[in-house]
Length: 243
Length: 354
Image 1 (cartoon, rainbow over the protein chains, first blue to last red):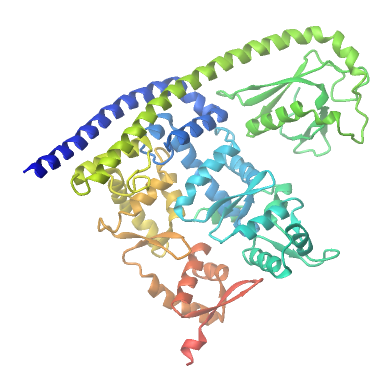
Image 2 (cartoon, each protein chain N blue to C red):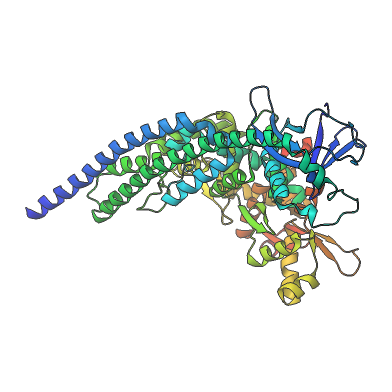
């Protein structure tokens, strides 16, 4: 009998707390509505403020972008902004994949996304792109962010890139290409290891081989040299992007 | 001044504008001439701008589009985009003042300006004061926003603490908390964007919202799936659904959590995850293993195929084509030839001819 009483009490406590949470939730919703009415525009227009907002949320353990049904998304409109950006990022990456093997610099991605958004759309920053990409990973599409030389390479195909591959990409970023000798002198690797990594990148279409270079063959990353020319996405490529 | 439609370039020494149509037309201004820059936000019918306030021109300045101007500033109008990043970079360059330490090919008259600059600084002071006031005003708005934001976050933090304490109770009382209460709790977490402290997933599956969403998806995706041979990657689904919605878009997690419930709700679609991690939605009636048989035929006809070639032949996305070929390989029907020229699949003669 005593045990049963304890059990009962236990459930009542949880019920109490749930009821309390429900009440606090309603109050929070009101606070958020007030905040939104005063500062919604600020979030929309000010990318630095967005960064602050996101960082503060992360610090307390809240993810404002987790669900479109969350309060943050509904009331501040942050959700739609990032989820739509996600769609645009996917489209650009798909369209350009055959050129660069699924690797693109953050700069080029930024440029192409801005072009696609049109004249009257709201401006987006590189930080916005990175946050949108982080959310896309959960779709199992191989989206990844690789830090290289002060910026980032965005991967958009489910190709396995381990630390070795990443380090070679970083090395290649400086000039747009890398050679076996450079890898050996900078990273102190055996030639076999260097060759394996480079071959993997070739197979994935992320690197192109220039056998006619003076000296030794050069492995170029199309992700890096297309940025210099910033070519338009052709109609054929755009069709590829919308399945 | 009418300089329309061009490309703006920033170097460590200069700001350069080049006409997009007439590449010969190119004007530049040394960064050393810049006093201040400020942003002007876009509005209805107005594009975002950067206003660049300049020192008065030195008497020996190089020829430009105009000999003189009554304005001491220029406005850069960003009709399309790029204002935010450009402003950031331009501010950086102006702060760093790298042109002072780096030599260039051209002679830039820096020293001679100093005296002239000081005498004519009076006009500048007025501008500086106005900018300062404006900045204080903006700063006030921002700091108010930050203050409000901080207060809001304090309250949000309380919610997080409360949810942790409830989660602990639930853990202690495995089975004594009703399913109904669990669902309620999960929906509260969903609203706040708090990860489920019990399961560590962001509220995993099981909220009513995701159940509803799963049913909606089953309705929306039936025809698109049929049109695409019964299978679509989750990325394709994300784009399709959100483009159709226009507003109140789904987050990637919303989509995944809804799809995880498809099978248990006995809906005519299901979520499948390949070894590579690629996630797809299939019609229940779709049998990928059967498709492998027809894939084998296609590859045999052609002798060998890469994922790209197969995709083009069959009219599939390269991603899904590759998965099908990999599955066929896993099942023993195909062999791979992995070279720097790419991954090519051949019928597995070891199997058929043994």
